[in-house]
Image (cartoon, rainbow, N blue to C red; front, side, top):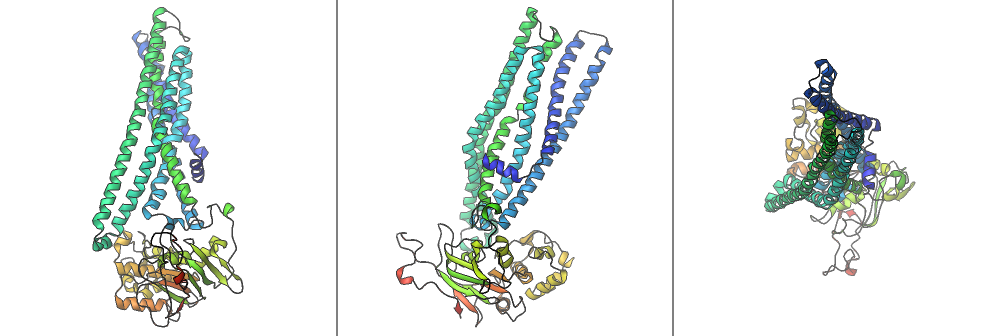
Length: 588
């Protein structure tokens, strides 16, 4: 529950709004409780055929309670969902802020489908805790006390029976449901993550997988993962059904018990605490029917808490990812500030790679301010991993990446203030997202102060200017569907325009000319690697990953994969005959 409390704290739930939601819920079910008691009294009193005027107040009260119940239910739903929506918005903002500021590596340590689940469905599960658990549990507690108190006025024995049944329906059943649900929901979460990851791969890489002949296999894995999700949901539904049965059972026992106590007292002439009368008997029998309306939702509330606890654990795991430990800056420390206006990027025996995955050979190099360097190597060797490590998005498996200059000193990325690293180095991914918004806003994600003139100049430089000017609203044209609204070449040029408008001293670009024809690719790659081309500011340092032919005179480094023993022993060590693998960047 610690993770759940922590995540709910990040949601910054407004206690005043929660109190209003609980009050509206109490008014809703309180109206139902009062309506049951008053209706019982009115029906049995009317059976005695008193003067009509004796029933007028009760008739009007019944109508008022019936109307107020619907109104209060609407207000309760409105208040509860308002709290939940505000909380999920605040939680997502806090989560994105933590990922952007303190946990940049988290985005690269999880599969994209898993990230979608953690930032999407898991956050929604926290909202469900508010809507389906916190508010209903508080309302049920208040109504249970009120119901038992009301029944005790007429029959303490019936009140004791009702209290015991309320404990069964409102405490025991939810606890058993929560315990039974825990294991099933753990399987459900794993199946959802696998289904989301497989589906994302099948959708976003369909063309490449079809060419490679692997699309059918990926689609089969996605279908199998979805079947696992359905099976996990079915297992959870069984326990939910059993818990749901406890509610009607407790209600029946309470009603039958109250009826037996009431009829015994009425038949023997033993007075109720409120007097022996048919009206008292009706109230004693019918009040339990309304009392269990509040507890009927508690098994579902227990399910919501279990799922919320699991979601909170996954969200906390995402928040706790980072190169330097905890996400909280107060725990992690601010770090050393970068004072160099034009920092150098230094690789000191850096080995890149993911945990439990292949690693690159060590690299030792210094990229001076304003230099342009191409990072090349066979596919799958780890070029992207090395670039992510240089950007501070992936921790080095060995060695150190440093940033700075000879005057102010060169500091390890892990020692620098994360905000300074983000301000100095920008990573432009090959699969960066094109958002479903305007062309202009798709460039302003890099620079919020970008002007329309600068945007058009960048688009002209990458070859998209004519196309943008032909659009209905030019820069303000919405790219409906995001990536799907552009061809592969247009998307690549738009992403390259983001590099052009960036003002960070160091840019790291992954495959900037992919999906372009050979002539356009050679022209743009040459301009990107030439400080005198004017495509980028001459003071900008650029590290470019490419598999295209690199123009003569450009500094390059070829990344090689670290050798491993055939039996797996010694993985991660360089063989003695390969000690020369630390390769400084040299001129081609």
